[in-house]
Length: 386
Image (tube, rainbow, N blue to C red; front, side):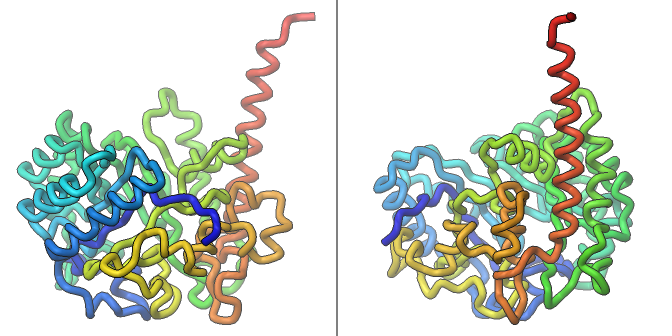
């Protein structure tokens, strides 16, 4: 077994179903339909075994802190009692590590009792939301095709309250070119979230993104994001972390990034399916059936064993598996070749530049130019007068 970076985080599919029917969802709306074979909830036996595997891995590799993210589907469908039990079982079986629990939710079912539980247990909540009612309802409707936005407005009041802010992780927001970026940012930022992660749609070379159907050289996504950057970068004080911008700035300054989507650092998380299967990054479900499958599960395999899988090695040794175009590019240490699903084509699999390559180039070079100009101004101010 080659050297590897041990796991520090797991995305756990505690529920395999969802109460929304988002038309872009990588779980339900693409060719991989394996969710239909999954149990509705992760069983107590699976949770117990999961805890034992976390303990085994963290003990062996001396990992002192470990994150467990409850995901789905929609994890709040499991109910409060289940969420409490899940954390109790994991905590009982992982006694010597500082555990950080989190929930990624669409927010529809969040209420005071769940919020109180999360505050009491320091369990963070991330909210998936694409903007105001008009923006959010473009894609994020329920199974009857109806808006769920009225429930989200109540959730936003809970999370942005003094109580809720203690455990609110921020927004995940999928970009849609139909939505005005400044309006989206204005709406989300009024709640003063700790962070916003603007996500490029999960498209690839066989399923080109909106606005890039005819040419990959155009940069509509960079243009969309840069309108927000120009507002965010000059805001004082800067209270909201926008993940893409922060990652780009850190990496261009030679510092360590914290996201799988950027840079060349090894990926240190895995996905646990509801039945206990261990999988690669779940967003690969948009590419081809079983793209996430490692053929391993927590009952018969340790976490160390996944590092023998080519699908995991590729995410640990990123640069070696990039296309020659990416390897020779002077921006590769920042963009990392682009997010893995965005690089897919049926012809070359993941050995392509990102379908968003032109956008990434424009975004990075524009931000770099802005930051360098500011650093030069600061430097000049500090120089003694001649």
